[in-house]
Image (cartoon, rainbow, N blue to C red; front, side, top):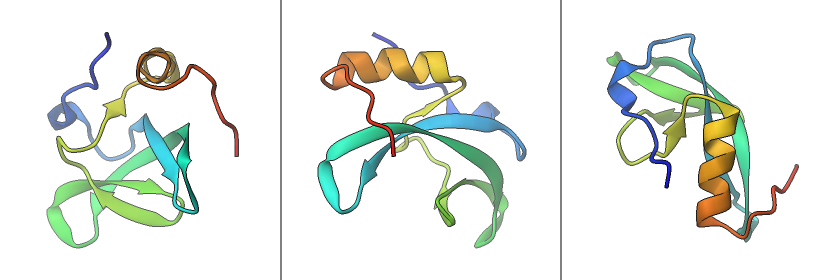
Length: 85
């Protein structure tokens, strides 16, 4: 089983992959590319920028360094089907 990577080694400008649940259809999840950026609410912190929203980067997020790692974890945790937007 693949685990998400330690979020402490990311820096602003990195591209990562996360699982994203559709807020309107909770039983649908997909893999989404996100950008690591400076957190606008915490100048010393980092955030993920995804769908025009900032999410503080923390160990509560499953962040993967590449799409292949995210897909392998998705296969493990979900039904194995990748849902596209």
